[in-house]
Amino acid sequence: MNVDGRTPVNPTAATPADDDWLERALAGDAARHRADHVDDAGFTSRVMAALPAPLAAPRWRKPVEWALWGVAGTAIAASLPGLATDVAREMFRILASQPISLPAIAAAALAIGAATFGGAAFVLRRD
Image 1 (tube, rainbow, N blue to C red):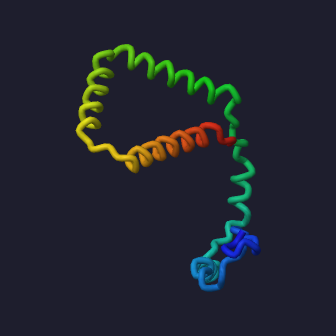
Image 2 (tube, one colour):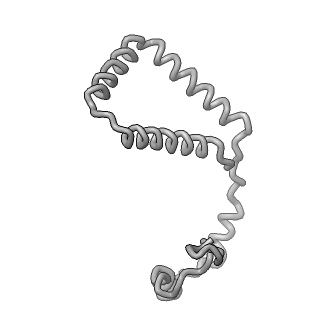
Image 3 (tube, rainbow, N blue to C red):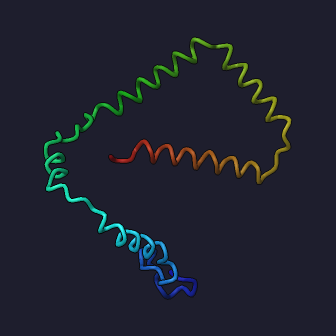
């Protein structure tokens, strides 16, 4: 709804003419360079037709990749046990020296939530 609560807002509606400067610039540039086209007598079409179809990744590939990355991360963490505690100790020392306020906690929670949502959206997208 619009600000007045009555008129629906369509975010995909055409923008006013003042906002079409980029479209006009691109169309003008294309019109100027249209005459520069070199006719290749269908060579490009023949080459594109002769190319093999793109290979599709099997469905099992992504879960296996994630499993392998998990195994690799676990192996690295297990091989460097002292590093994890040292990093955790230093992070605690740095964070403990910072003043903590409610807005800072809210900002950190928002950043963690956004990173989690973004990571999940990236992983769960359909290619």
